[in-house]
Length: 98
Image (cartoon, rainbow, N blue to C red; front, side):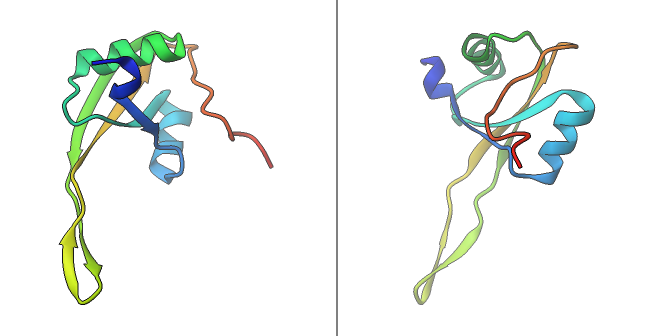
């Protein structure tokens, strides 16, 4: 699996994500459901040129949403919490602007 297909997008708009980034040097990403921790670590290290210490993954279950008169379930997706080495950081763009 290519590194570009493993990492789908960073999750930067959540309060929990901001706290993890500021206090523990952890970053949140939406990743492919088929990717394992080793593939995620390799992709982050290659794409962002940083040293990854730890990777935690979880499958986020889809929610029931209204679709017209009926209901439908959104797809499940995988979230990865990536801890970087001390002194490392990832510039996700849009941070610090104001």
